[in-house]
Length: 486
Image (cartoon, rainbow, N blue to C red; front, top):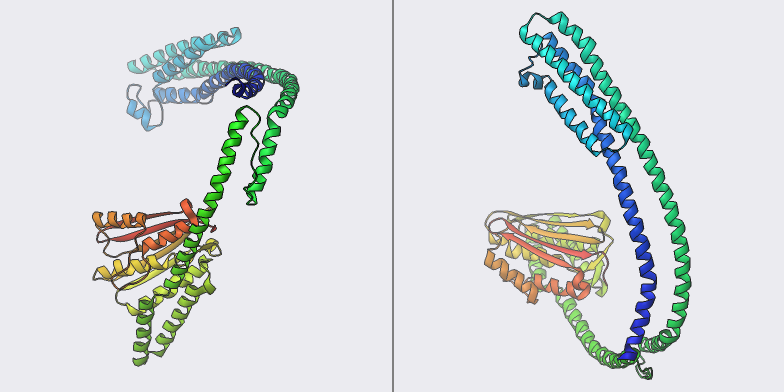
């Protein structure tokens, strides 16, 4: 136990030799800068608060007093003030007094305190002059006197208040500049200290690293060489167990792991053969005989009805369908080819069931050259026709979309068919999880669960499928796939 602990102790000591000094330094720096920025922000907030009155107080106060004097509004009718976009003069004065009183309580600078006292005194005087004008208005017949008081008292007082506020802002800006210079100075100080500490820590790290390398790295190098042998399939080489420390435990585990990997490779090889067998079955089953027979019947019927153009069109669609279905044995095709596949399938089905369905396909051009597993969408479309559209009497619509979403593609197949009840939807989702093949009543297609099984085979957990359905409104199946196939 003691020897096993020795390696851990070396690593911990080397880490603490670096972490402790840096933690102390950064804690000091963060503490100082927090206080400095707090002080700086406090000044900025004070300036912002004072500047609100610097910009609007004189104009607003002069305007409302003037309207009171000339009689366009009554001093005791707040609604008249509001209609003209004005505020009661007493409310303005009281609000300003509270704001500047708060600034005074937060201020320690002597010059700014003097300025704030001036502002508060001027506000008190202004309130008295407003009282005089209001009393004159109540009595009536003092228009000339009120106009004189407005010009000689109110306007001058609001101007003095504005001047005092501007002086307070100027003094605060000077203080803010001092704080900024202090912060800049401290930043340079901490930078110099950090350079020195980094130099010292670098030397300590070099010493500790050399000591640790001789005791730990050499055995790990041997392990790397054995790992390289494992990488090329040679599991005959084993690590020697002679260090009498934690590395011995690692060496024993590594040797056991090599044996396990060798056994797993054999198991995976057998599973790979099963996967290849499944792929071959899927490729063989892709050509649906029922669809082929029904389409050929449609061609015969159209020919007998002398609708040769329609028959040629169906034959062309059928050719496109099987060209993509076969695709030279490939199981991975482009999105554009998949679009051609479902378009030819839906075009044929629309001709067969013209009174039952319409369809729409919308695939983003940006993803048409991306790769995807073949016959991903066609079984979903087939499911929408035979389990959705054909389940109701009126005509339905099938919509297929493909959207570009960054490194993923989102495909949806939506139908306006009969939909599913909650129980049917739960059963449907359960079949997706278990991978149970769902054949339609006429044997059409693999079924949606088979599509999910194939997608999991190629994409693993990097794909997703969701199903939503409402009775009488239809079903939506959404599949999310990465833009590349592994």
